[in-house]
Image 1 (cartoon, rainbow, N blue to C red):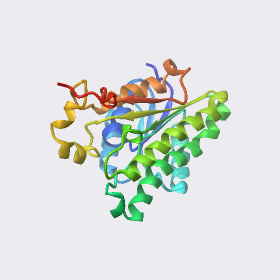
Image 2: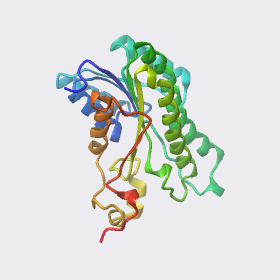
Image 3: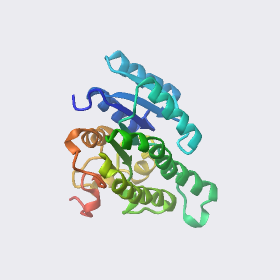
Image 4: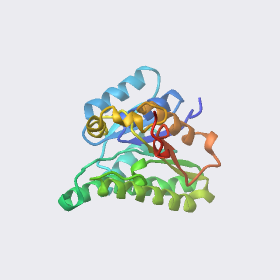
Length: 252
């Protein structure tokens, strides 16, 4: 088991990519804290499922955009599980609209959740990781950071900032044994991506050389790698997991 005796905290952990990461970490021996904002039933069900299989999981509610809520959440996790050795910042929202119609509330919500949440949780755990001279921080970004779509100025801005934040924080924490990396998924079968996928229909697959939409498990396997000792000499990187989508080729 590659993550045996590790304590992991996963934001947005109740559904989609977060759920798959929580399950994969637990299967590799980690104790997992599943952080959710509104999906309490899904989070509790997931935690119960992991515990029933002999793992250790707990579900906690927190608003990633609220620094006080994040601090309380981290304190609860460390009281229940012990020091956090792995942090996965997966929580995110989409509020798409053309820029000229975008309301400030939509801009602020996306930036404060997607980027602010990463800052808040990293800020809450980084010092402890530095003191222990060990830690893994994994930020879930998006190919939308570099390959933009109409109506996503707020979302693309938040993900581009996450990529830059990842690289900058990696430089600061590297000498203390803490790695900071990001995963940039392409089209993945999740509830959040459903509106975009449904709108594009079967045309999406034509732009993916591997000719399939990704699964949350595709991202989870990369997260396990970045959380494990296998990636000990990798930091400040953004790993694109998109089936070749961003290569720009059109499959025939």
